[in-house]
Image 1: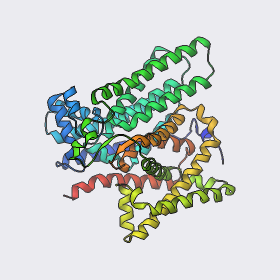
Image 2: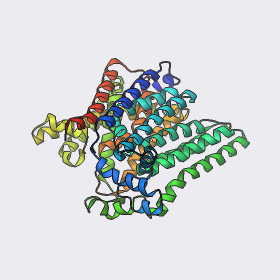
Image 3: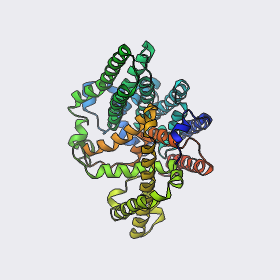
Image 4: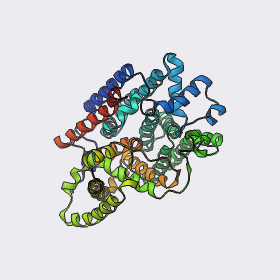
Length: 447
């Protein structure tokens, strides 16, 4: 297998026009939906409660303690600010607030990529995010992913640039501090983003140990890193102090959903397995050509691992498959339960086979990761996102929409390994984009 990471950085082909086109299409589609569909859809009815609470009563300890929904408060406060500033229809204004976060995200990535040492990786990150099946939906509805992704992606971009620098100038330090602050705010939007802070600390440690430093510069950089990382933890610590935990009192007690759902810190064995499967599913469209480049001597061993996993997954279909487009597609394609289980098992085997090959490729090129902070950071985020699921207690399902938080980092890894896309991959990207728009606009034609 060739060394695509080394050959692809810096990459000669630019995907910025494609990223710009996808961003424009998503913003236009979401904007038209907001203008034409004026009733609550999907989770709008649940989330508008907290948006109204913060818009009407402000941001205070009392409003924090009365929050009803599971995500952190910052996304709701973001949309409440739009309601307060625009002062029109509450549902429409909150949606505009969510849409505005996507506009800022796009602008931030395009500006940051131009200043980055790895621009094509960040174009790959936003392309992957924009074609994700839930992308247009989260841009046009009262969902918390938009602000969360804005803070997470811009923070990650800034932090990886900071860790890649040796000379600690004032502008570099400010970049690192803002990056960490944004990532801390991302956690207060969606608590799963705590993986960002763990990845940031591990990346800083790795860079500190592997770079060639002048003695004085080394310790100045370390001091700046520690200051930035401390800043990232402050929003999270303040929220924990108010809530007495990482989840709101209402969702921990079950009062928010009439005792239907609870969430909090606890031990969960099955959730990491489910998340790993969904990460493998969403990696496949972007990395499947690696299967064709795998050495034939390794294929039988990889199949020997992937096939039994697929068979086991087929038997556990009902407990492993989660609400989302994959579940809908399986139900559509298979009328009988045993056929559905066979299809799911086959998909799992294929996705795991591709994931193992991806892991081998990353291991073979592991030395290249050290010289490319965005790739190392993306891998750490994906890894910690899976690991942290062991600590997610309660009974709220893992909707596959949640994987959108990993989409930019899946994109970075994919574009690092495969910097040049062929026609088949472009066709898959187009199909995913169409699905994303269709998932939003179906609400315009259903009650």
